[in-house]
Length: 95
Image 1 (tube, rainbow, N blue to C red):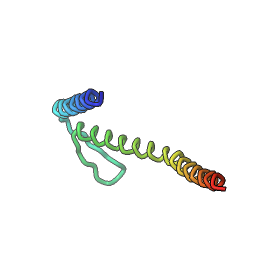
Image 2 (image 1 turned 120 degrees about the vertical axis):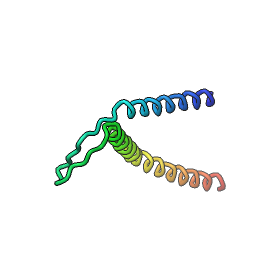
Image 3 (image 1 turned 45 degrees about the horizontal axis):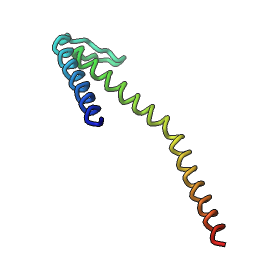
Protein backbone atom coordinates (compact mmCIF):
# COMPACT_ATOMS: atom_id res chain seq x y z
CA UNK A 1 0.00 0.00 0.00
CA UNK A 2 2.83 2.42 0.77
CA UNK A 3 4.37 1.71 -2.63
CA UNK A 4 1.11 2.64 -4.33
CA UNK A 5 0.87 5.80 -2.25
CA UNK A 6 4.43 6.78 -3.16
CA UNK A 7 3.78 6.14 -6.84
CA UNK A 8 0.64 8.29 -6.80
CA UNK A 9 2.47 11.11 -5.03
CA UNK A 10 5.40 10.86 -7.47
CA UNK A 11 3.03 10.92 -10.45
CA UNK A 12 1.20 13.93 -9.02
CA UNK A 13 4.46 15.82 -8.42
CA UNK A 14 5.66 14.98 -11.93
CA UNK A 15 2.37 16.24 -13.38
CA UNK A 16 2.61 19.50 -11.42
CA UNK A 17 6.22 19.98 -12.55
CA UNK A 18 5.39 19.35 -16.22
CA UNK A 19 2.36 21.63 -15.97
CA UNK A 20 4.56 24.36 -14.47
CA UNK A 21 7.12 24.04 -17.27
CA UNK A 22 4.40 24.21 -19.93
CA UNK A 23 2.88 27.22 -18.15
CA UNK A 24 6.28 28.96 -18.07
CA UNK A 25 6.91 28.29 -21.76
CA UNK A 26 3.47 29.55 -22.83
CA UNK A 27 3.50 32.63 -20.57
CA UNK A 28 6.83 34.26 -21.27
CA UNK A 29 5.33 37.76 -21.34
CA UNK A 30 7.10 40.21 -19.07
CA UNK A 31 5.05 42.17 -16.56
CA UNK A 32 6.14 45.44 -15.01
CA UNK A 33 5.85 45.33 -11.23
CA UNK A 34 5.71 48.54 -9.19
CA UNK A 35 5.78 47.92 -5.42
CA UNK A 36 5.30 51.57 -4.36
CA UNK A 37 9.01 52.25 -4.62
CA UNK A 38 10.70 54.67 -7.00
CA UNK A 39 11.79 51.97 -9.40
CA UNK A 40 9.79 49.29 -11.11
CA UNK A 41 11.14 46.04 -12.47
CA UNK A 42 10.02 43.59 -15.09
CA UNK A 43 9.51 39.90 -14.36
CA UNK A 44 8.03 37.22 -16.57
CA UNK A 45 4.47 36.25 -15.76
CA UNK A 46 5.45 32.65 -15.04
CA UNK A 47 8.19 33.68 -12.60
CA UNK A 48 5.85 36.10 -10.85
CA UNK A 49 3.21 33.38 -10.51
CA UNK A 50 5.80 30.93 -9.18
CA UNK A 51 7.01 33.43 -6.60
CA UNK A 52 3.45 34.06 -5.39
CA UNK A 53 2.74 30.32 -5.17
CA UNK A 54 5.90 29.80 -3.09
CA UNK A 55 5.00 32.69 -0.79
CA UNK A 56 1.54 31.19 -0.30
CA UNK A 57 3.02 27.76 0.34
CA UNK A 58 5.42 29.08 2.97
CA UNK A 59 2.65 31.14 4.63
CA UNK A 60 0.36 28.09 4.73
CA UNK A 61 3.04 25.87 6.21
CA UNK A 62 3.87 28.48 8.82
CA UNK A 63 0.22 28.95 9.76
CA UNK A 64 -0.40 25.22 10.05
CA UNK A 65 2.72 24.66 12.14
CA UNK A 66 1.80 27.52 14.47
CA UNK A 67 -1.70 26.12 14.93
CA UNK A 68 -0.30 22.78 16.11
CA UNK A 69 1.84 24.32 18.89
CA UNK A 70 -0.94 24.49 21.53
CA UNK A 71 -1.89 20.84 21.03
CA UNK A 72 1.77 19.82 21.30
CA UNK A 73 2.13 21.74 24.56
CA UNK A 74 -1.05 20.11 25.91
CA UNK A 75 0.22 16.66 24.90
CA UNK A 76 3.53 17.24 26.71
CA UNK A 77 1.67 18.44 29.82
CA UNK A 78 -0.55 15.36 29.76
CA UNK A 79 2.45 13.04 29.33
CA UNK A 80 4.10 14.61 32.36
CA UNK A 81 0.90 14.27 34.38
CA UNK A 82 0.54 10.62 33.33
CA UNK A 83 4.12 9.87 34.35
CA UNK A 84 3.53 11.44 37.75
CA UNK A 85 0.30 9.46 38.24
CA UNK A 86 2.03 6.21 37.27
CA UNK A 87 4.84 7.01 39.68
CA UNK A 88 2.35 7.58 42.53
CA UNK A 89 0.54 4.35 41.60
CA UNK A 90 3.80 2.41 41.66
CA UNK A 91 4.54 3.77 45.16
CA UNK A 92 1.12 2.61 46.36
CA UNK A 93 1.68 -0.92 44.99
CA UNK A 94 4.99 -1.28 46.84
CA UNK A 95 3.46 -0.71 50.29
